[in-house]
Length: 354
Image 1 (tube, rainbow, N blue to C red):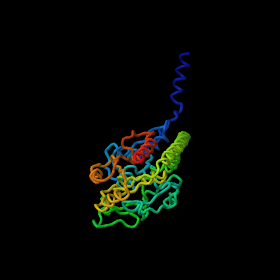
Image 2: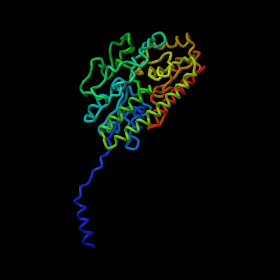
Image 3: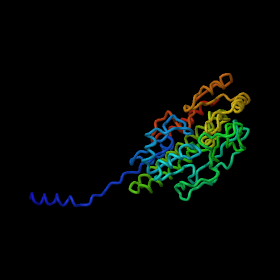
Image 4: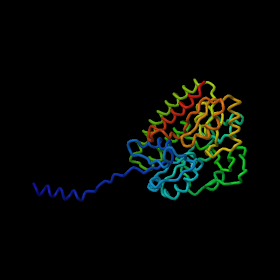
């Protein structure tokens, strides 16, 4: 009996061992998108967040741990160069072999151009309510991009964006008073939950391609997340329909995707879409608008010092200086972050109800 046991033990040494593949390492730029990816990866793994909560994505310096997350990533999801122009080089250099997905270029999402001027009512001319055709669609359905291909229309300034100090906004608002260049489209597209639904499908498809063993889980998780978003969209719409006419000023022009989806549009923004410092003329226009239209609600953002907002409006009729945050700096990162961000936005706007 002992010999048989010994023989069986020896034979086991020569049996092939099936390796269990690890799930892909995934890096994501901002917390709301990280939340979408985390939902799709539930039960399989957790993505790494590159830009820490509370920081502005428009200007940022990577910490060593964040650079390491990029360097070990098999897949990188990021919004676009328009949101984080400084991030393109680290992604290309640190995550050179990773699959890179630029979400602003995923086919089928709603895109809006940057709004014109400091006050939107005077310049408002909406396009198709369903958004622009996806003129930046990728070669494949996942939004993969040739890492060396750049269209001229996406060209940016150098990292400091310096130009003639007297440069003005062109007719599409692509440059602020300091000459900073913008892309063609407003990159804050995650604030439209209908876009988030399309991104969830893309995220699941990309991860399923990278990790076939867990493909069914990714797709099932995405389907659950989309169903939850559908319910939340209906809930938010029911709440915003009861608000009536409200007028509010936001700190920087980051919210039009949410505003237009739920028909609660801001009257103006103190700063342009990249949150650069507003010109004195822009501040004066906002102050005049507040007085002329009786705006009584203005929002700051946690990523920026509120002192300027308070000083601009302290001698006006503004009754509420609240906080509105496109990134959810005070919301814990993870799968629930995105839904809580949507709730926070509608709660902020509700403060302005007459």
